Image (cartoon, rainbow, N blue to C red; front, side):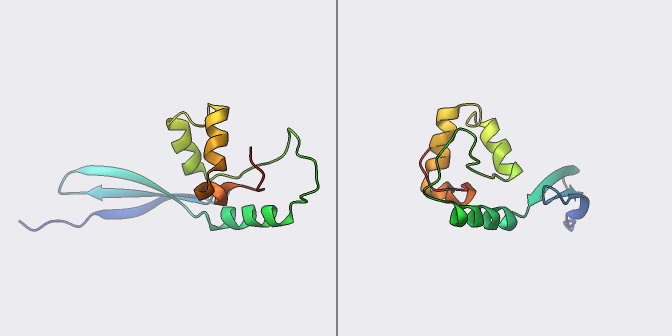
Length: 108
């Protein structure tokens, strides 16, 4: 018996979030999967621009925007409880490998 190819169709597009939702159907297994893809290049570029334009002499206050995070990353952090723990979230944001999400370089 010959294996069937998985069928993939674009299900929806959200231009505000920059997401595409794809529907994949595997006829061999009779299963369907939804996959959400997000293009994050604009978020990373915008964060870099904000980091570059930050006035290092400006006062660091309590209402300073510190990051822009893609929605899929947010929900992963939410699932793991990181978002709901301010200290853990600050620690996550301060890690060097998460710098792309930061809008300025001061330690939280």
